[in-house]
Image (tube, rainbow, N blue to C red):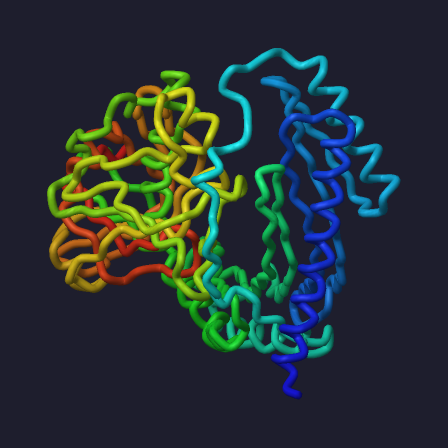
Length: 453
């Protein structure tokens, strides 16, 4: 019997055990008088290793478990949680949630999702790929990664270290509508951060790189991660501020996800029903250029944001959020959907593999199209107002002329209003960053205000 088969069987046994616990919680809550119940149970384990300058700084093995229960008495809601899974702890937890529900305010929009919205099909999304790496092996990998960075160039003079992390866990969700399902998943990562110094000045810079995947063999090689971290650091040496101006701005793929994240925040149900978003009543409106499409792909095998259902058990499906620049749907859980007179979009736990459809240009071709402007590789601060759409963030990156990077830039601020910024998108690159839940390439903006020296 292969190791993978053994691991699968062990995962199934763990899932079955947690499903039984979840079923017991639902029964206990009903026994205590709850009208509706939902619960989640999870267990996980992992390893984290950090090295710096070739020496081990930390080695952590961790195991955790937790359970939460939400009970409804009529339209009153109560929640409690515990880190213990034994029967007595479960009874105490359920009792605490029930007491809270009895004293809570009535909320006509509270309650479980509609039964017909719950997932009934559970495809194998290949999310669970345990990595039986020992602490010694993880240390060796981190040292190789950091050494690759430190030996890359003599201008690399110090290190903030390299780290290896691995995690696998099992999560089960159940409710009193008959839903009870769980699955196991894994996530592994390797990162490195180093410091560089310039020979002809007092300039010092730091940068980093990382790789992450569900499956350890899908991660970038340790040497490559170190070399990319070092190369990024060296390229930032000699960075300077530039004068205030208006110019094209290109967000590199690794920071473009934040720009799209502000849009998702603005169409999230909570902000919409509170009227605290600049995109209230934006359904059917042209917010982006006609070439731009944004959609969810929740059922991609091994992807970071894949899930057959959200944290309420509502079935996920591929859908367009923006099609030809027009907003097609919001991001709703059951509660916000009821507040807005709509249906849940299965986003109680956020979006799932949010994808900005790539264009036909690679990174260098995007620079050529920009010709002259500012390439953003790092964003600083949280200067985004979801109510008004005003955007102002510190930034670092590179000044580009003739489609070629000229020098590193720091201590500048880029500003505008998100409605204008989204309309001014002129291209999306095909250099898609797949490491996170938002999958997008570089994004080129026709013009933004750049405040510098």
